[in-house]
Image 1: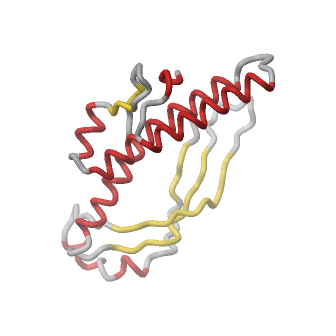
Image 2: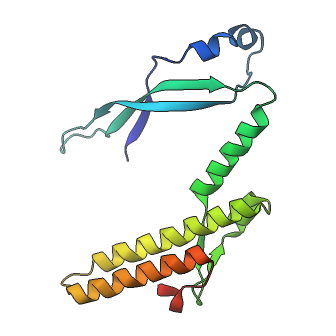
Length: 168
């Protein structure tokens, strides 16, 4: 596993300056904002070393929301979290079934359900393609057939239709 480290140098300090007084007066205060991170360094230990590889990031852009904007940014964070953590499977008919947890997190929001469904379908066919590519001594014709199955499956996921035969 590659460790992520955050560089202590803040190049976006101006956006925080106006909050310094409140932060000092209110220990535990939270700020909601939008951040941009830039890769600044990587560490790659030698193969025989017992150290983990790491990537160092630096904050290069940071804007803090005012009180009226915080809810909007929290909703954006929630949407990004749902997209990142969506889970489910393809059933026997090839239709995407979202996990109970994913459905609970979407709160019946149609866009969140659709984003989660697309995420699960894309992940399924990415895995399917990797398995097909890993078959030793596969012929070009066999690989073309598998690639066509992936393309058809993705098209059906995009249309909200079950994939033919589940394409598992």
